[in-house]
Length: 333
Length: 270
Image 1 (spheres, each protein chain N blue to C red):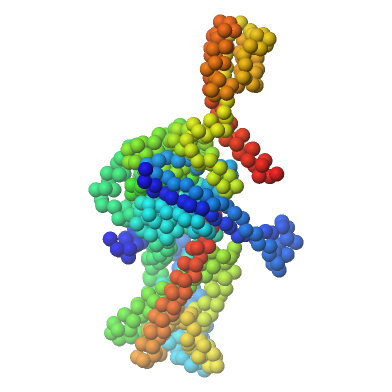
Image 2 (image 1 turned 45 degrees about the vertical axis):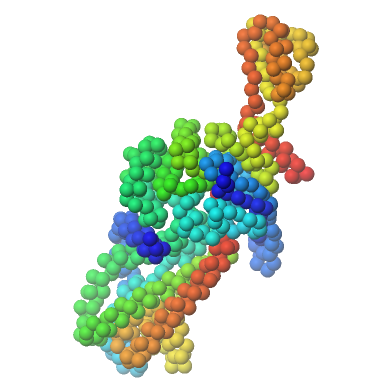
């Protein structure tokens, strides 16, 4: 697959000054300031192919938004090589900017006091779209997002969910090849989140748009991304499929068996290679190695008449929490 | 489509939308413009009283009257209020949503400047018309369109000069946490050195060399002087040349500082 994004040893540092709280700190900083340099992104290397949907994950302050800002041309890189659509993003050439879009969940591209259609028409002029192409795109996007009735309503009179849909519409009306999304579902209710996710999946499927998304909502990632990159303390800690991540981070499966009658703990002695065994009345919960999960289930069937038998991966949300917690503990040490 | 054409289209679109938004506040425009014209009228009355009382000034009553009648219009036409807003956008990371789109980052500010001036004209021109009519017998009114064309050209250059000075000051927000003190200093210095408070012709003779050649003269005083009538043809051409030179120099410096600033931009916030 031809990479549309290629980063090699991508690094970004920030310089800032520290100031103690209070009047004393303020006066001291007038005379002498202590400057510090913070490594936000540390020699990150990856490439993304055309049409991929990739999730960029990490705890707050991990460097994922900084990475997204470098990719979209908002920030200059401190060092390393970065090519997106054969451009150096920070050059912000017209040919580059017309082929990308960035949606930031907490910043708006829309004019607040006028209907969204005014902002869309502004994009028509900015991106040099023909009237026919503009009308076609607006009709298609409005139908997919179900916002036809909102196009002529003042933006400030729309709800948060409606506004995010309109933001996505404004970002996609020029048909970008790459869509950068920073927390696109933040603050949305479950219905609006689901709508946005299914829209993004449609955009990727129908238009072949490459999507790079940061989100703290693992449902977004599970619904959209076949590949995830985990950034923490500025370093790329993982790059691979979501399944690989689950296998790597949580090599054991969760098995739950419910019997017709309560189970005695002693009956489980014959079930080998399991951990975290919990018995609660007729329900037995335990963890087993992926490779042994089948054998364990077979053993469980022999313990008595089964009502239900369920095997599952650990929740992705829990995996991420454990992963970040482990890393931050390591980082703090 | 060329970059200039595309940016002009964007400015036209944004100006129209801005006018639509701002026209809601028509009452505010009238009050703004009343305030704008009040100071020059008070100054006009004071200086006319001084002349009538026998004060020896290097200019006559016709010059003073024409100067102050036109002052409110020229001050408004060449003004810019973007420095504080642009600095705020830089500091709060609001520039980001413009930086990812293929248009000049300043189109929004140009459009805002044009749309507000367009609306202010509706409020201001009738007021100036009334003052003009009251003092019509003691004003210098150039015969023929020549001086008026140069007056319009000079106002355009003056507006560009103020706008570029504003960009230059706002660009410092890429490195400084707060440029409001600089913005305020510019306003105070400009109000004196542009001739907005006292005509520069009334400044002490020892200061003439500096006063006549410093950039702020070309933001207000010089366009008014073209009509008020003391400039010879040669002074007028030299003045326009200097004004154009200042626009080019400040634009070049602003561009340099801006480009360096963009490299330092930290795009604060998510």
